[in-house]
Image (cartoon, rainbow, N blue to C red; front, side):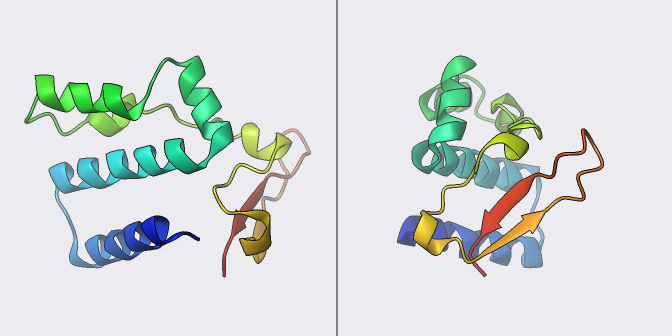
Amino acid sequence: MNQELSNFAARLRDSIIAGFDAARFDDLAVELFDLQYQYNPIYRSLCLGWNMSPSKLGMARAMMPTFAGRWTMAPFMPTSAFKLEGVTFLPLKERSAAFHSSGTTEQKRSCHYYNA
């Protein structure tokens, strides 16, 4: 995992442990959206199809500075995508483990790669 993603993961863990309010959650969620957009080509393609980008979420903050719901504007990856392709920002050599769903929906298991 690159340093930028590692730093984010550490800050996210710290925030979860400390507890955070809606505005802090929104900031972290939007930052994660930006990182996924930047490093996950499959997710970026989905966002482009929805005409959404990190700069558009930034404009929402400029227009509504107290709005803590920008994260709801980021496209959600449909669960079916995880059944079709390796949706991850991890390079192949860093995928040390994978979680496979039970496959109860549509009888096809999804796969989620991670670095253990």
